[in-house]
Length: 453
Ligand code: HEC
Ligand code: HEC
Ligand code: HEC
Ligand code: HEC
Ligand code: HEC
Ligand code: HEC
Image 1 (cartoon, protein in one colour):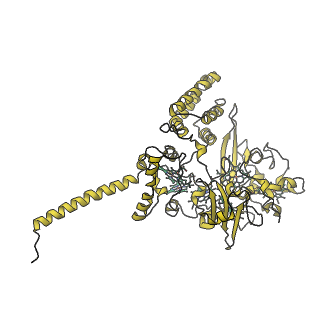
Image 2 (cartoon, rainbow, N blue to C red):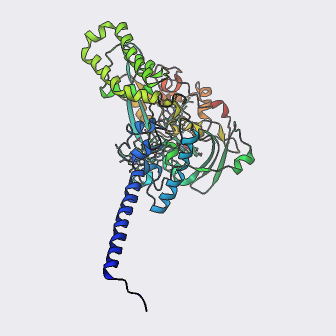
Image 3 (tube, protein in one colour):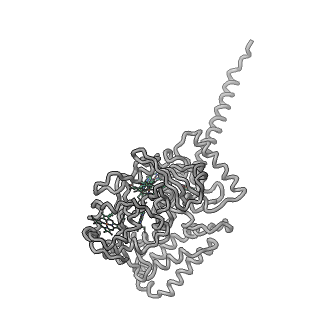
């Protein structure tokens, strides 16, 4: 005969089970939520990468959580597995880790970026006009205008254009060396008509067999916007933005030069960094004793600007908790969107990556943006706007046009579209362009481009 459980015992049992369920469940939920918090990601393992949360606060994504990009919107079990894979970090805490850190295992953009941004984000070309300041006595202001061709060159009947969306649509695969993927040795591209073309670097260090065996990365948002979560802006951009927004006043003589020199000074500890900031003040006050009396408000403003960044700068320059750590600066974190301070777009578009016929991935400047325009005043000249809308002559479309254009300077007809053809850097004509000729584009190798049709 089956034994009957007394009603009271059963109720007590259910109550205990229920309470345990609520307590354990709550602990798990709280634990799970805690492990999703920025606090956990930033502090759980000591401050392994103090610069990341600081830089995140300066990004357009300051208000979202680390896990939104690093783990993404996964169902519970896949998220648990992904998180468990981060257990290896615990091992690094015991055995030591290298700085700067890098993040090789972000979730697929379908679960992260594309949870908030649509896949075909780039719908317009964007004209951006930014104020620039020279590191001279007057902090002389100029203006740099660039039309970013996010959908390609939309005028002049150029139909077969491929813009940013094409790169992000699974059409480009590549093989890179190093965890920050700065050296790209091989690219495989699928064009809209289905044609597949491969490009290999003329300076490849890997053999064909190694390339064939290597993992191929499918290009995504993060391969261009790798700094979306953590912009480490170069000092020049930070200072120019501060002038432009009115946080710093260009009336203070040589103030840009002073701040740039300060930001470039190596430091050994946080205290050392703070001391160097204070010292820079003293030096400035000694060198320009009139500045503080002539421009008291502006001087106070400059002080506030630096004070505000003092802690941040110090954190960025070095983490004092890890004196043995390598010197970490903004230069430790390459930005792939551009090609000035880091290889960026020129990792592929720099002339070295060529198909079997020797044709490079396009290097001509007007592929990705208009020619840069530097002006002293704010007005954009008509000739510049007119060129944006013109069809390019056939010779300009040759892959080696940029490499060979100076051979064509004497030819007839250039003036009809470009006006006076005179090489230089004074920005008076289309050809005397300081944005092209006064910069050493160190990641562009035009000598590697020898293609002829
Ligand atoms: C908007 C998305 C986004 C957010 C939010 C975000 N990250 Fe990142 N993070 C990235 C991307 C993209 C990379 C670069 C991946 C690559 O190089 O392939 C990265 C890289 C890193 C790296 C490697 C170093 C570097 O800068 O390349 C660390 C460490 C890191 N993130 C930690 C964090 C922490 C901690 C937080 C929260 C405080 C956070 N991330 C928030 C997108 C994000
Ligand atoms: C939780 C939502 C969310 C996620 C996830 C997210 N973003 Fe954003 N992102 C935004 C919002 C909102 C803005 C607009 C912010 C503003 O205009 O101030 C933005 C702005 C941007 C911008 C323009 C501003 C800038 O930084 O230049 C870029 C580029 C961008 N996101 C790329 C990315 C990439 C790449 C990822 C994945 C690594 C990503 N985002 C993940 C919400 C998100
Ligand atoms: C081939 C490189 C490349 C890839 C891949 C790429 N972008 Fe962009 N994106 C750019 C460039 C270049 C700009 C223009 C930046 C500027 O003008 O400062 C831009 C601008 C943006 C902007 C701001 C302006 C706008 O048009 O709204 C957002 C947001 C953005 N991208 C999100 C994304 C997302 C999300 C993905 C992935 C689906 C992605 N990008 C993939 C290069 C890329
Ligand atoms: C991993 C390699 C790779 C990177 C990195 C890369 N691209 Fe490309 N890009 C290609 C390939 C391959 C093509 C197609 C070549 C062709 O059109 O003949 C291409 C084509 C283009 C085109 C279209 C050219 C045309 O004639 O229609 C534009 C615009 C462009 N890229 C912009 C950029 C920008 C801007 C960046 C940096 C933010 C960038 N790309 C980074 C591989 C890359
Ligand atoms: C593969 C695409 C691509 C090619 C080719 C290219 N650029 Fe750029 N360039 C970019 C992108 C992307 C940026 C960043 C735009 C931004 O920040 O809004 C940029 C930025 C610039 C800037 C502004 C830099 C600054 O100080 O902020 C200049 C000047 C410039 N390019 C000149 C050139 C010249 C000259 C050439 C030809 C020798 C060239 N570019 C070829 C993609 C390209
Ligand atoms: C029919 C009008 C026309 C003629 C003639 C012409 N160009 Fe151009 N050129 C253009 C246009 C349009 C652009 C693209 C501007 C842009 O996209 O911002 C351009 C761009 C250029 C560029 C930058 C190329 C690039 O891809 O970034 C150079 C260099 C150049 N032209 C030199 C010359 C020389 C040298 C001659 C004479 C042999 C010449 N051009 C004749 C219309 C013309």
